Every structure is written in C-alpha cells, then in structure tokens.
Image 1 (spheres, protein in one colour):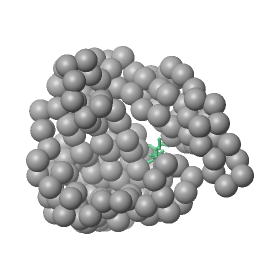
Image 2 (cartoon, helix red, strand yellow):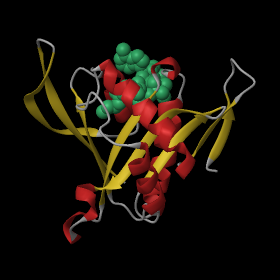
Image 3 (cartoon, helix red, strand yellow):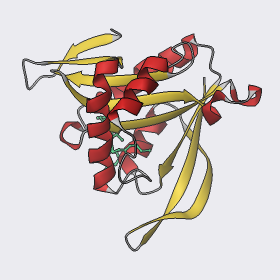
Image 4 (cartoon, helix red, strand yellow):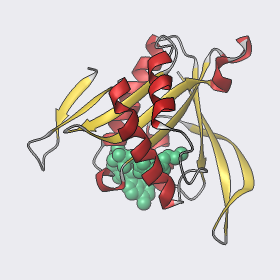
Length: 178
Ligand SMILES: CC(C)(COP(=O)(O)OP(=O)(O)OC[C@H]1O[C@@H](n2cnc3c(N)ncnc32)[C@H](O)[C@@H]1OP(=O)(O)O)[C@@H](O)C(=O)NCCC(=O)NCCS
C-alpha cells in the first residue's frame, strides 16, 4: 500500500495503491464510464476484456510499469497508468514513461488525481525514469491544470487532431523532466 487518507464526507477510506489482479473488472468499468463521456479520451469504449486486463496486471513488469488505483471502499474510482513509452520495445525509449489517468466523474475535484500523480512521480523517480510524457485534449482544462501543477509543460500541439461532435480539438503534448 502506497498511501492512505480519509475523505471528509464519509467513514470509508480512500486508498491509493498498486493494482491487483482482482481490480481488473473495476478498472474496465471505470475506463468505460469515462470513455462514454466522450470528452476526454480518444476511445469511447474500452475494447479490452476483463481477462485481458487481469493478464496485463499479472504480467506487469513492476520494475518499470505501474498501474495505480484509487480504491474507495472496494470500488475503483481512479486509475493511473505509467508505462514505458512505446511499450518499452526499444532501447531508445527506456527513460520515458507515458501517463494516462481517469477519475470517476462522481469523485472528481476531490484531490484524487493529485494523489495519484504524487505517487506516480515519486515512483517514476525511484525507478530511474528521466521524463514523463502524456497527451491531452486542448479542451480538457482540469487535466491541463493538474499536469501544470506538477510541472508538466506543453511541448507541442497537433492542431485539430480530434473532432468532438462538431468541435475540432488540438492534441496537446506535455512533458515533465524528473
Ligand atoms: C483530469 C482528472 C484525472 C483530474 O482528477 P481529479 O481527481 O478531479 O483532480 P484533483 O481533484 O486532484 O485536481 C483537480 C484540479 O483542477 C482544478 N480545476 C477544477 N475545475 C477546473 C477548471 N474548470 N479549470 C481549471 N482547473 C480546474 C481544481 O481546482 C484542482 O486544482 P488544485 O488542486 O490546484 O485546486 C479528472 O478530472 C478526470 O478523470 N477527468 C476525465 C478523464 C480525463 O480527463 N483524463 C485525462 C485525459 S488526458
């Protein structure tokens, strides 16, 4: 267990910890619900079975790849992935970790994203990563605020890379040197 704190509104405890195999269902449920919002992720449904997620967690190289969950009384309400860039498939990318994050809509703006980032950045430093990177829609003000809070800076922008309904959205590429 990486850290523990209590949410003010409830007796239940929110725990930030590494994912276990039994979390597979909850992670998929969370990612599907965020995908269905259609505002934040390219995928609108998580095309991945529970069994595939179980295998991913089971076979994770925990020296280099991380899946963190926010466990609220047994429910997975947040998830952060930190994987070697390009799947770690080349010596050229071993120093870079790519981050993805989702928090259940009912639990946003309560500091869960911040907690997940704190843990992930400390973990990445301890594993010898030199840089973290991610990409985000230009319309995602909350996420961009969160990333900047941790020192991420915009490194590039792919103009009108996505279209959400009738609105064109830029892909903002962000990075943090550790
Ligand atoms: C982005 C996301 C992970 C953040 O998680 P979270 O638990 O809500 O984050 P926190 O509560 O720790 O922090 C939210 C911050 O955004 C700020 N914020 C809230 N509304 C905002 C707005 N409209 N514009 C800018 N900042 C805003 C909050 O004040 C807080 O900042 P602070 O800590 O400096 O006060 C979450 O909103 C989410 O899952 N969104 C949908 C999925 C997503 O966007 N994933 C990332 C795709 S790249």
